Length: 118
Image 1 (tube, rainbow, N blue to C red):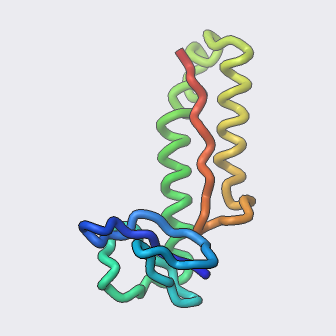
Image 2 (image 1 turned 180 degrees about the vertical axis):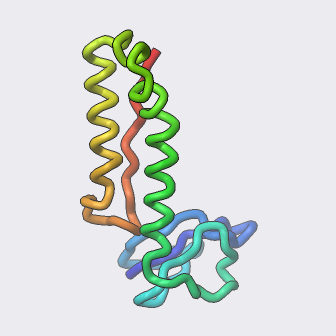
C-alpha cells in the first residue's frame, strides 16, 4: 500500500513510501491519490495524479542545476577537470535523467549521490 510517513510531533508529512504494514507514524494514502510532502496528515489528500512526478522532476532539475551545470556550461571549467571527474559527472547526470526508470518511481525514488569535484 502507499503510505505517508509523518513527523509525530508536527504531524507533517516527510516522506512517501510503499509498505505492507503501517507504523504509528504513517497514514495510508488512498489509491489514485498522492500525499503532499509538507502537508499535515489531518488534511485530505487532494493532489491530482501527476503531482508527485512533477515534484521528482523539479528536484532532478534542481540537482542538475546545482551539481552538473556549473561544470558543463563552461568549456574552460570542463577542460580543467580530470577524466575521473568528467566521468563521474556524466554518470551522475545519466542517473538523474533516468530517474523515471526506477521501479519505485515516483513514490520511492533513490537519489544518486553527487560526485565530489574538488
